[in-house]
Image (cartoon, rainbow, N blue to C red; front, side, top):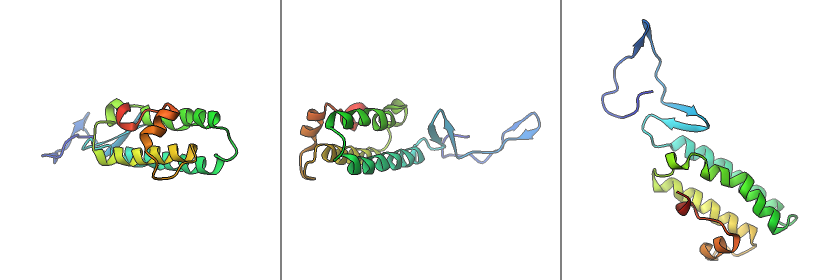
Length: 134
């Protein structure tokens, strides 16, 4: 993979073999693209987190708050924290999607209205917001 957007129209030959180009590559679960935008990684991660948030909305009536917090730590927090030092400082539009999902989840877990201030909910749940994690 050649990283960058300028003048990438050349071939790479190794042992008389022309190497194929890749636009993205998955390394240890992190999807790196040629522009270092991490667009596909964000999309996959936000889709996974969105599915887990919908699961929380269905099971919240049957599981106590303590267990929901444990499930958050086990199922969602690893997506937020894994390799975040690499992909966490890209575009704000990606962080906004995850922030909205995290706010939605906090309201689901605490049975509050969608207009409730999320900072108070994060304090009540002892969660760090996405921006503070990065």
